[in-house]
Image (cartoon, rainbow, N blue to C red; front, side):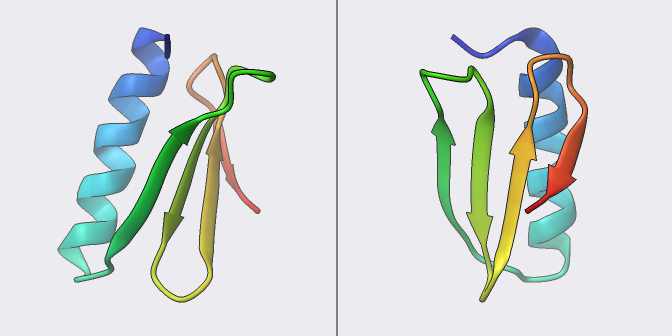
Length: 57
């Protein structure tokens, strides 16, 4: 299960991506690390850590 921090950050990042008309293809929880992965647009990859911090890959 994703944490509350991950859920909030996922919604914020998803809204930012869709505001620029960037399609979101995959939102996935990595069960091994507990991180949320977002694949969007042509080559945008985002990883959201359990504490809500995130980074581009």
